[in-house]
Length: 145
Image 1 (cartoon, rainbow, N blue to C red):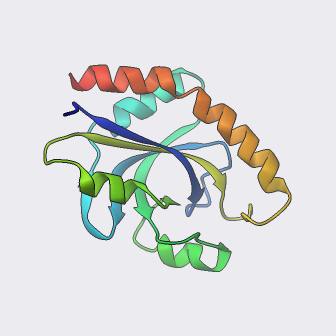
Image 2 (tube, rainbow, N blue to C red; image 1 turned 180 degrees about the horizontal axis):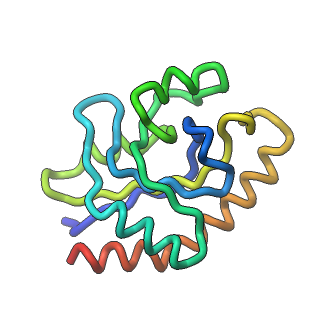
């Protein structure tokens, strides 16, 4: 049993307003089946911003493969702001009523293709950002209690 679950990691931006190093906090997880709402997304984003991170709120979609440049527009057509490959699967496996948060640090996106030399630098920077999200996640979990 668990009181809440947070899925954290890296993702690709679909929205050109998201830059590498930004954090997307999902208010809804899409992909596969019924969209899953993420309670407290704004609370978590506010906590991340208070810790000096560039946090955004919006829908996250889970894909079954890496989404490349030409596909970003298609995947983002429903308003999804970023893409990952795990969150919808984790959310679907949770018992009803267990709150979920999905937090993705952007590594690639429009204007920042994944398969380019700069990805290594962006990935290392994103890892440093991800390492700073723990305190905000703890505050999010406490707010749900």
